[in-house]
Length: 150
Image (cartoon, rainbow, N blue to C red; front, side, top):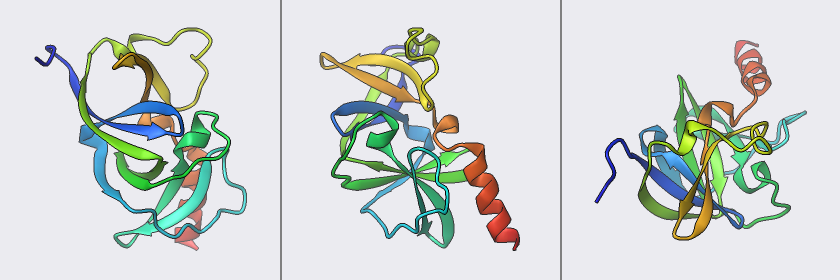
């Protein structure tokens, strides 16, 4: 039974970590595409790919959570406001209902982590709920906008 107010999320593995992505923001799941590295990428931004004719920044999901190396098997394309962002994931586990109180607050130790909105438990394991609006630093989008205008 789904709890009232629960949000359906796509559950993915980022290295050894489990994460939830709001299903309404998931545009599609693809095999990895060729990536063009950026000159000065932000921490976990690998570069850009062309997805359905549009330039999309690609984030290394496992690196976002501190994993050193991972085998990224899928690219999850996400809608973030008016833009699209690609998130490299180790695997896709499926769709699950996430309780509404998960993103109510983070423990102080995790409050400063970019891209994390909350922590939940899934099948006895900790799961990070991602804050999609904070996955890619605004400077990356600004650089893409400048390239498009040139």
